[in-house]
Structures are given as structure tokens and as C-alpha cells.
Length: 536
Image (cartoon, rainbow, N blue to C red):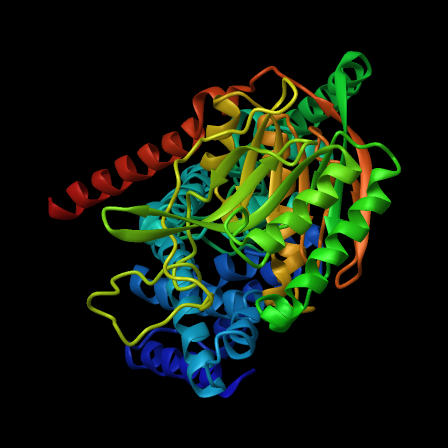
């Protein structure tokens, strides 16, 4: 365990002892174990089955504790989990942000601590609110979902690898997300955790909050969980079959993705601009032999201002005309407004004649990556993309009209926000396209984690999803969530696939996160009710 983490956990242990709590190091170990199990269920370890009982050790550790001590144990679980899940942030900050290790490591620690607060809050409220076993069974999943949903928008939001994403390859389970979103998957995974925990208490004869778990309790809990999880699985089986039947009679589009594999350290070097363009054109020629209707290049594939740099833009246009198909290419862009220049992270749709017929500007920007929040008060902080000024956000939900099939473009980490994919689908997008540059992450777990999130966006909206990444992972995901093709990291690639085009909007697309809101309302009601009782 890294020394800072060990010291942190040790200080919590000392605090617990000072409070005269009957606690030993085993509770700390259990909290740590939950954090490690959670991380193991995500890519790139990818043992998704661990998620179904990953939080059981934490629940055991907080049994019969006061809420504030449960908070501390939850903080340990969260800290271990997010340090081991997001370790790649330190690599990115050191390699491309020129931040020395003695600064990048503390920044990673602060980020992990912030995210750990959500698990800490879960542990504290689970102790405070869950007086009876039946309440524990239903309130724990609702509480967890509420906190995940809250995390998705607080401080611009960072819903990276929510619990439901662990099941991205479990096709029968994730089909419910077309009704409940990824939060529905998180709910049933947490439900399984609580059921296993109650079973452990029953068979060991241990009490929960001084209340024994009866045979009736465990039979009821197991029955409810089996019914709910079984119903989710059955729904998945039915939906997969019905969608497969639908694919047979639906229209399809042949689309190609080009993975240029341009090193991040060379990407913005003017000496390599021509070589970069030549490489993308060459790979596009290779894809063009299969006569795709659209060729997709990654985020900022053109490391210059397309249509403004005449010489380099002419090279791109000439290649497009020779290949004679539509292109979607990522490029920075700018415009003059009110005597100042506004910069955008954009994607251009170009017709076979080389004419730009549409442009999408990224709507959700990366703090410190594409702009500096509170720049007026934090002038000493910089951003990762130093080649252009601070980006300006585009309009959420904008789509690009292409061959009777609107494209919903999501640039980079916009794919982690369910509401953005839902917005473009609501506005008529029939195909989702995620263009990104994951070269920042090197060969860490981050590109695999990023790709796994995209699977749920396809299922939630029942849209084919095309992904073009500079260094990978590029690929194609169908509306069921199957990965039709994917590339390796750091290889040159041009891949073409036929993807189904669906037009019907799902319940989730039409109504959004109603389920998450319901969980949030139930949680807030339970908190208010508990506070009123404490006042009496």
C-alpha cells in the first residue's frame, strides 16, 4: 500500500480507537478489501462478477458502528478503490501536463478523496437509515444510485465507471438500461450485495444494528432479489431476441473508422502535420476499397484549424474527393465574436466533394483539460491542451444531418454523460459517434474503461455506436451492446462494418433518469424522516 494511503488509513484507525469503539484492524482490512474488489470488477482487470459481492466486506465492517465511524471506513474503501481505478490520472498529468510527480500524486489523491466521499456517505447513511433488514435491502441500492446520480452533475460531474458499468459485457443484465439507464444496473448489483450480506449475517448469527436476521428475513430478501434480478435477465433475453429480429428488417449503414495512432508528443508538432494528414489519407484509402458510406476520423485528427489553414486543409479535401465518400473528422475550430476569438473542439461532416456540410462543437468540456475553471481566481493553474486557448462549449443535443440518418456526435469524455447521448437521440440521431483521443492515457486501464462506458450508451438509446480513437480503442457497438469489432491500442487501423439503423426511441431516451430521480426522492425522504425522529 502506498505510504500516504497507509498513513491515512492508520490515522482513521487511531481515531476509531480514541472513540472507544470495539474495533480492530480487521475492519480496516475489510474496508480495504471492498475497495480492491470494486476496482477488480472494472477494466482492465475485468472480473465483473466481483461487483456482485464487492461491497459485502464494507457492509460487514460497519455493522453496529455509529454513522461517523462508518463514514471513515467508507472513506477508506473509496480511497483504495479510486486510487487503484484512476491511477492513470497521475501518469497523464506527469507525461502531458508537465506536472512533477510530487504534485501529480497529491492531485490524484485529492481527486480520489473527493470521489471516496460518496462511498463514505453511503456507509454513513446506511448505518443511520437502515434500522430494519427489510429497509436495508431496498434503501441501500436506492441510496447508492442517488449518490451516483448526484456525482454525475456535481461540480460539472464525473460519472466515470459507475457500478453498473462493471456489467458492460453481461448482455442479458444491461438490457434494462433502455428503461432505467445505467443506474438500473447499479441498483440490481447493489441489491445482490445486500442480499449476500444479509445471508452472511443470518448464517453466522450476527446481528445488524442489534437486530437479529430471522429465517423469514433472509427468505424474503433472497426471494425478492431472485425475482428482480431474474426479471431483469428475462427482460434482457426477450429484448435481445426482439432486437435481433428487428435488425434483420432494418436499414444499415456501412461505416469505417480510422485509427491514426499519432503519438501525443508529436500530435501538435508543426513538423509532423503533413505526415499526420498523409497517414490519415492513406488509411482512409485502405478503408475506401470497401466502399463505406462514411469514414470517421478521431478527435482533433487534423492538428490545425481545418478550413482556415489553406495548404493543409487542401490536402485533406483533395484526399476526400479522391476517395469520394462522406467524412467525419475531428478538428479544433474558432470564430471571432465581440472582438475576441472563441475556440471550439469540433467535428466536421464533409461531403464527397470536400465541402463541409455540418459542424458539431463539443458541449461538455474537460476541466483543466480544455478550459481552466475559476481562471480569474486561479491564474496559476494551466490546462493540458496548451496549443489553443480555452475552449468554449457548444450546444448540447446538436446533431449532424447525413444521408437521412442524423449523427449524434460525442467528443471524448462526453460519452460518460448519459444525458448527452440521450439529448442527441431525442433530437433525431439514428447513429451515435464517439470520437476521442485516448493517447493521453498511454497503455493504462483508462482506454479500456472509457470504451466500456460507451456500451451502455448504445443500449440505453438503442442506437449503433461508432467509436474512432486516435490510438485506440476504436470500434463498433450495436444497439444490443455487442462489440462488433474493436482495435488494439497503439496500432494503425482502418476498420469497416455494417451497422443497423434504428429509429424508435426508448423509454429512457424519452423520459431520462426517472429511476435515478425516484431513488433520490426516496433517499431524501428517508433522511428527512430520520432527522425529524432525532429531533424528538
